Every structure is written in structure tokens, then in C-alpha cells.
Image (tube, rainbow, N blue to C red; front, side):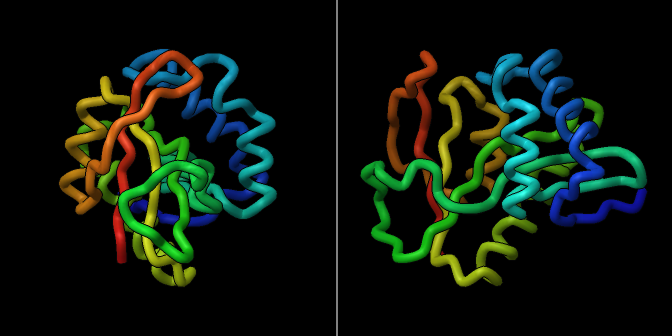
Length: 160
């Protein structure tokens, strides 16, 4: 199987939205039918902040990499130019095969190329599989918070 990491394009929109919906309908997530919305995915694509792992005509994994959406928080590291990761998912049919780790490795590499000095993101405390993967990729669990959406999360960071 030939897997490519690339910036998402407008032609990928419907497949990306379908991938998010498949995750919402079949695996643990704090997302729902309103988030992530098609409009948000389209905005991420237009801003060139959405990245995918793609296999021929199928989306394997998706993630936002861009301005840190949670920068106003009290983070462990005082970074000058952090980037944020958000809306990361692996299609249910590709889960458990290392693709989550693969997209994260590519995001880390890309963030360094963009001269970021680290990464920040949230993960729901109940998302045990994702937490294990993030720790195995070198991220650090730097505390807990509560969202406005009814779940608690951990703050994950990586300093370059």
C-alpha cells in the first residue's frame, strides 16, 4: 500500500468529512455531528492547515497543524513559536496499524520545518489509545483541564 503525507486539497473535502463521520460513528471520540463540521474542514483546507495520509483514493488519517487554538492556556513550556495539533483522526479501517504514529511523525517533522519550537494540543482523558500513542511519540502529558464541551482533557506538549 502506497501511503502519502500531504496537505489536504479542496478535492479531498468530501472524503475527509466522511472520515471524520466514520470515526464519530464507530470509535471513541468526544466529537459529534456538529464537530468537526464540513465548513471547518473547508476552512482548514483553505488556510492550508489540514494534512492527510492518503492511500490512492482513500483517506487514512487527518490532522490540523497550525496556529495553536489553545494558546491562552498555562502551558508547561514557554514557547516562542508553538504550533497546535487538532482534529487528528485515523479512519476506523486503518486503526491499529501504526498510521496514527505515522501522521504524528510527519506533523512533528513539518512543524520543525516551519520553524516551530514545539507543539501543543488537547486529548480527552477517556481516549486511552490516543494517549498511549502520543506518549510513545515523545509528547509529554503536562496537566489536566476541563473543556466547555463536558469532558476533561490532558494538555500534551512537545518542545523541540
